Length: 360
Image (tube, rainbow, N blue to C red; front, side, top):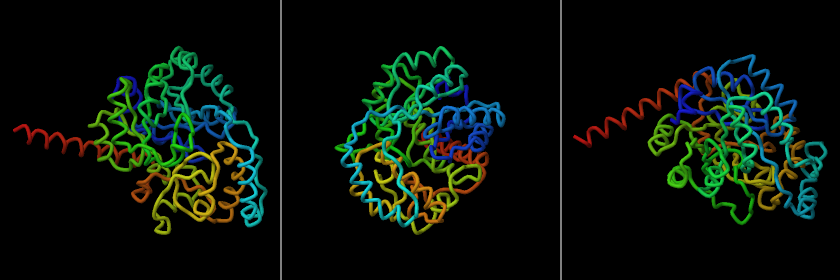
C-alpha cells in the first residue's frame, strides 16, 4: 500500500460510502475500529446533516475515516422526457398512495457548503463521486492535511484526477453496486463499462497514483488478486451492507441472498443515472424508458421508494447491489473485516508459495 493509505488503516480494506443510509456512523466506526477504513456518505444529506454524522462518528471512534461527496451535476436533462416519465409513474403513485416528488430540486447536493465544513474542520479522507473537483479545491484539502480520492471508471478519468492533484483514485469496475461514478453521464455509453480487473490494469499503466479497487469484491481472495495486480486496497460496499451496523433497510439486506433476486442490472429507473441493483418489478417495468435525468428522476421516485419500503414491498425499492451479492455474509462489521483480512493473508501466502515453487 502507499504510505498515505498505510498510515490510515491496518488492512487494505475500505468500506464503500453507500448513500441512502447504509453507511451509518455505527458501521463506519466498527469498520475503522477493526483496522479497515470506514466511509460516511454525504450524498443526499444536507451540509448540517453531514456534519452531525461526523460529530457522532467522532464520538464512536478515534480511528481515521473518510467522507464521500457527490460532485454537482450539469443540467442536461430534457424537461419533456422527465415529464413523460412522471406520467408513466402515475400508476406507482396510486399503488403506493404517495405523491411523486418534484424534479426541479437542486442538483449540487449542497456541495459548496459541505466543502466549507470539511475544509474548516478537516477529516482524514474525502472522496468524490460523479466527477473530479477543481485544483483549488484539492489544493485546499491538501493544505488542510486531508487525503483526497477521486472515483474513476476509465483510464482517461484517472488521468484527469492525476492532473488535477488527487492523491488516490478509486477505480470502479462495472460490477459495482449502486451508481456508476462516471464523470460524464452519456447515455451513448450505457453498457460500455469496464470490468474491474481490466480497468485496474489499464489505470495502473496510465497514472502513478495509488489505486483503491472497487466492484463486486466480496472475499479476501479477490482482495489479494487486486493487490497482486497493483491496487493498494480494495473497496467493498455490498459485503458491508448486510452487517447489523448498516443502516440499510431490512428488506434490502434480506434481498441480497433471497433466491427471488437472481441477478443485477444497471438501470436508470430509480435515479436517472446508471446504477446497479437487484432486478425487481420496478426495474423491469420502468427501466427500459427511464430518461437520462439525474438527480431529477431520483427526486421524483424518492417518495415511491420510501413508501414501498414502508409497505414491506421490495419489488418497488432500489435494491442496490454488486454482482457478488449472493456471497454476502451477515456478521458484525468488525468481524467481517477480520475475516476478510485473514482470507487476504491466506490468499497472498498461497500466491507467494506458488511463486516460490515456480521459481524452484
